[in-house]
Amino acid sequence: MNPRKPKRNLIVGGIIYWAVISAVYSIILTGVLKNFNLTGIQIVMDALVNNILIIACCILIVNNMRYYLPRQEKYLYILTISLSLSGIISLVARGILWLLFHDDAHYLASFSQSSGIRFGISFLLIGCFAMMSLLWYTQEEQLTMNERKTDAERLSREAELFKLRQQLQPHFLFNSLNSISALTNSQPEKARHMIHQLSDFLRGTLKKDDQQWNTLEEEIQYLRLYLDIEKVRFGYRLQTEIIYAEEVLLSKLPALLLQPIVENAIKFGLYDTTGEVLITLEAAKENNYLKIIVQNPFDPETSQPLKGTGFGLSSIQRRLFLLFGRQDLLSTKRESNNFITTIIIPQTV
Amino acid sequence: MKIIIIDDEPLARSIVKEYLQSYPDAEVVAECNDGFEGMKAILHHEPDLIFLDIQMPKINGFEMLELIENPPAVIFTTAFDEFAIKAFELNATDYLLKPFSRERFDKALKKYSDKSLPVPSTDAIVETASKEPGQQNRVVVKDGSKIKIIPVGQIQYLEAADDYVKIVTAEGNFLKKRTMGFFEQSLAIHHFVRIHRSYIVNTLLITRIDPYEKDSHLVILSTGAKLSASKSGYSKLKEVLGI
Image (tube, rainbow over all chains, first blue to last red; front, side, top):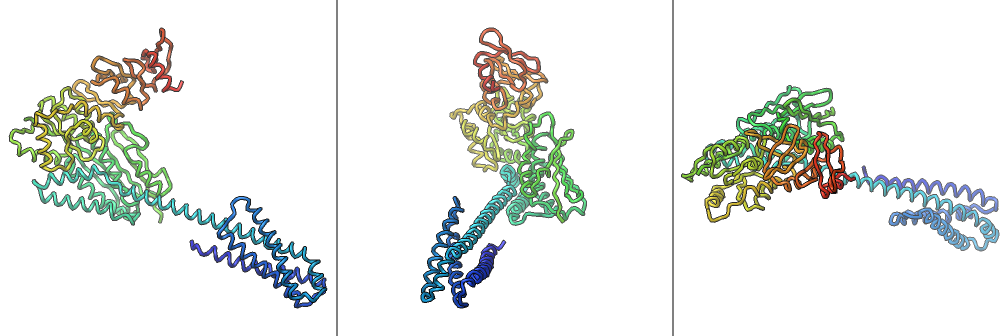
């Protein structure tokens, strides 16, 4: 939103108000003063002097409120300021008009007679304007405050999302480096290959910071990179299977979402059972959702008691909540010896 | 010098083997993938030294050590485990952080073979390590030749039995070489209260508390077990249950 816009609105509003004041004031004055049999020039001068003074007061009030917005007893403040300004106007107008027409006794008499009405009109007009600018400034203050609040919320949300995306398991990194260290002597070519894979993987976690969304194809490529490294580490124990139909490859999902889910599955699949472990990932489209199912084996007898969704999936859940505002996109269940993690990603076309 | 390497990553084992090649008297008698295999191999080969990873399938390195009566000397290897590292430092144990250099490896072996240095007690390390909150969700026991992992929630009560603690569950009783004081402390976060010198009870299972003789009470569990509570035990229990 353009922040200048409300300011321009105030100016336009002020001009309209001025026009209205002038019109009202002129009509009243013409009507009232006509009864006093005054000349045209006297009426015009009278109206002009009073009008200019009232407008000067209005400008004063606006400027004043720009720097000081009363918070407590604002209505008393408006009443006082309107009353005193109206009083001052009456006196000043009287002085000026006396200077102009002091030799016209008839005018001066009528002036005295109408002073009550003049004061009343000035008070009403100034009071209305003061009320209006008070409302306007209060509203503007509220708007900027809201803007600041949403800005702060957006920033902290982005920072949190960034952090959640960047989460890298130090365990993975150091163990991979250890594998490379082991390979350097016996299989230097393989060590070099693994260094490249690890570099590509790390670059992936770093570069995506400005990019929130990936296609499933990109995510699967990135996942394979990760799985290749893990397979070097765990050897034959780790088997993986990725199942998808061609047409889902262009579906969009939050960047770097799949890898931590699979990492989680591997971690608990491998640490909860001995022997070979098969991790499967299935991706399919269902209505307007991309549905991804990750399965890992676990031992129902010895697995550690779970807390919440368990298995360290809470950061994924948090990410999905921050992005979609929904808590139901990630679910887990146990089926015989399999732990099944399902995520659904809304596809907004 | 008989050596066993216990690590779930083949390449991590191979680098230890590679470094050991420059020690002619070192003989790797077994390589193990997990704590189960490790325990069997240790009982079978009685090695002088083991290289032990912490994070492994099923039971971790510390839990495996707990199950062995007279564990051999240990050099721990780990990639990143803040709590384990703290446990090592507290007990002045040598450990290797992966990836480690040959120089660092040699230093660890030198420390091991240097008989003038005091050997840190494995028991102390294991006891420190098992105080980690993540470790306290389960208790690992030996059931004959098998290893049993008991989730804490399945424990009904614990009873002192000489040098051991008897762990009573629906599936039977298991013995663990630990003190009552240890369990009293580590199980406090899981609704367990020591109601007597000889009993620690799972308060979630209590159905009734009856007065019994003077100064003592009888705690009755939903399983039908009746345990006596001492005067101080009863007041602790009242505090925990909020009565």
